Image 1 (cartoon, one colour):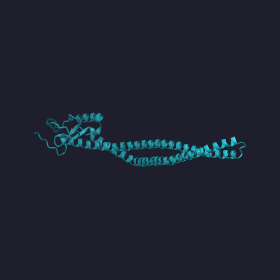
Image 2: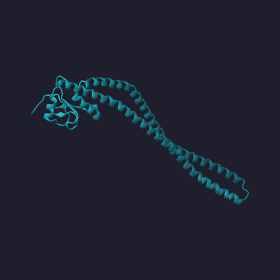
Image 3: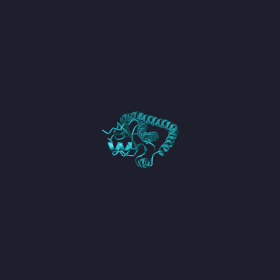
Image 4: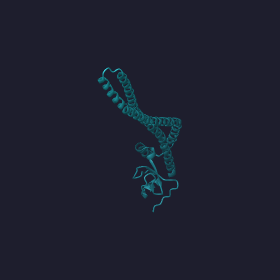
Length: 245
């Protein structure tokens, strides 16, 4: 490098490219996470539908059972009335009358129980329909997101490749003493966290830590220095004015 502005320009450009990569990779990651979240929502809604469907089936089966009990009671009542007409003794006649009275009394209770069971099952079926609608919505949302992600992913990956190519060209321009520190920071902190610009003539643009005057002087001397707080490699903006006081 012939002057400090060369190093400064390279560091600034590298920082811009690294932040672009962070944003692009973030878009890919967020898309994948969104798909994962929506897939989990589908699974949750499937489980919810299975639960309410199972409960509805139990209620429906119970209602059918009550209807069968009513029907069986009717058969028993009809059978005993027929037997009453054919009774041969007074004792047999009275016994059948008692049974018929009991069946008729039971019929009212069974009717109420059957009606209540049927109404409960029909009312609960709304939960099945609601759960099915939620499942269909989540599936539709997932498919739409999947389609959009599949459409945008190749373009994002292409942009990432292009930015990486530009980044490589800029990185080789760094003087060795800068490159060694930069490479170490990229390995340990990631590219987007490796650099920080000096803001307001005195502060680290990443952590807002105040940079000592002697550190600023080192930067002006075209020497690498990192923030004592966040460890990022520092560089100065184009409009930087060194103030000793």
